[in-house]
Amino acid sequence: MNPLNEPPPVALPETGSPLYERLADHYRRVIAAGTLAPGDRMPSVRALMSQHRVSLSTAIQVFRSLEDAGWLQARPRAGYFVRRAPASRLANVAEPEIPSLAEPARYVGLHERISRVIERAQAFPDALNLGGATADAMLYPTQRLQALASRILRRRPTLLTEVGEDGGAIELRQAVAKRALSSGVSVAPDDVLVTSGGVEAVNLALRAVAQPGDTIAVESPAFFGLLQILESLGLRALEIPTSPTTGLSLEALDIASTACPDLKALVVVPNLQNPLGCVMPDARKAELVQLCARRGVALIEDEPYRELVESSEPARPLKAWDRDGGVIYCASLNKVLAPGMRLGWMASGRWQARVRLLKFAQTRHNESLAQLVAAEFIGSGAYDRHLHQLREKLRTQREASADAIGRYFPAGTRLSLPPGGLLLWVALPEGASSDALFEAALPHGIRLAPGSIFSNSDRFRSFIRLSCPAPFDYRIDTALRQLGTLAAELGRSA
Ligand SMILES: Cc1ncc(COP(=O)(O)O)c(C=O)c1O
Image (cartoon, rainbow, N blue to C red):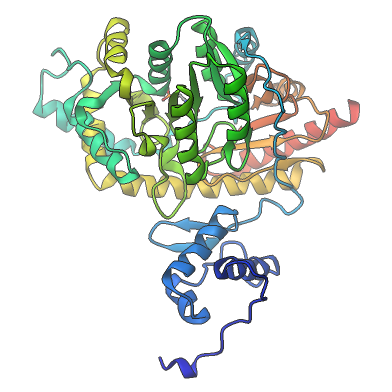
C-alpha cells in the first residue's frame, strides 16, 4: 500500500522514554479504556509496524513489555490477545517485604502440620479437590498413551520381565535431551537420569549436595512437598522472600547468603512457582545463576510446570545459563503428560556421578514400559499438540475460577492471575485464617490448600491455594460461592 494513503501514526507524548515504552503505554491506555477488550486479538506485529511506522524490533519490544506486565498473553501460532482481568475489584497479591537482615535458618518442623492437613482431607474422600496441583485425568492424552503402550508391548513382549537400563531407557533420555535443546538447554542423553517424578529428583539432588544439619535456601512460600523433603533429610530451611510476579528476591538471597556463608544449596522453581504461579524474567534468571556460582551455592532447579507457561517462545530454565555445571536440573512429566506414569528426569551437572550412585543405591532404575511410551509420545508431534491444548484448557479454567473468586469472595481478597498452570494463590482479607477456612470447607465437600503448609513461618496464614484442575462447571462455581460465603462469615466472626 502507498504509505501516503495510510492514516498518520498516533502521536505519542515526548516523555524521553524509549519509543517502544511510549507505544506500549499507548496500548495500555487503549486496553484500560476498553477499546480493546479482554480476549480481543491485538493487531499483528506487521500491522503495528505499518500503523506506527516502527521497526520490527520495536514492535516486538512493545508486545514483550505488554506481555511481561500482564496486559497481553501470547498464544502460540495465534498471536497476542488482551488478557482478561480477574474480576476488576481483585487487586494483585502484595509484594513481599525484603528484610534488611536475613531470618535465621530453621529446622523444618512442619511434618505434623502437613500430615494433619492431608489426614483431614482424606477423611472427606468425596470432596471436590481444589487443593491438589495435578490436572484431571481427562486433560491428559489417555487413549493415545494406552495405544502406544499396547503397541510397544506387542513389539517387545518381554519388556515387563526384562531388566531395565540403569539411568533410564535410552529412548527417553534421547527424547528429553533433544526436546531440552528448544529451551536453550544442551545436555547429552548420558547426562540424563530418569527418576520417579520431580520429588525423587529433588530428593537425590539435595542428598548429593548436603548433609543432615546443613542449610538450604528455599522460596517463601514454597511447595510443601519440598519442605517435607528437607525435614525428612534433617536439613534446615532458610526462607527467601519471593515476589508473586518476578519470583525469588535476588536482593534477599544476596543478603541471606552473606549472612549464612555455609549455605549449601538453593531450591527454586523459576517457571510457574508453586504456589505463587510467577515466572522469573530471563534477566533475573541469568543473574541468579551467576550469583549462586559466585557464592558457591548449588542451584537445584525444580521444573514441573515449565511447559505450561503461556508465552510466545518456550520459557527458559536456569539450566540454559549454567556454564560450570552448578545447576541441577530436575524435570517432571507428571503435570504435563501423565500423572500416573510418575516419570521425571534430571541433569545433575557437577554432581552427576554422586546422584547416579544415590539413585542406584536407593531405587535402581524406573520400570521400562512407561518410559518407552513417554519417549515415543514426546518424540512425536503429538506432544506439542497436546501441550497446546492443555495450556488453552488450563487458561480457560483458571480465568473462569478467578472470575468466580472475584464475584463471590469478600472485599479485600487479592489474587494474581499467573501466566499458565492450574494454581491460584489467593490472599484472604487481612486477619482471615486459611486453616479455619480449610476446616470449615471440608464438611461442605470442598478441599483447598491452606497457606500455613507452604512455609515454616506463619506468614501465609491468610492465604489459600486453589487449583483449577477440571473444566469450569456448576459444581466448581457452587463450591467457590460456598468458599466465598464461608470466608466472609469467618471474617465477621474473627
Ligand atoms: C514445585 C513442585 N515440585 C515438585 C513437585 C512434585 O513433582 P512430581 O509429582 O513429579 O514428583 C510438585 C508437585 O506438586 C511441585 O509443585
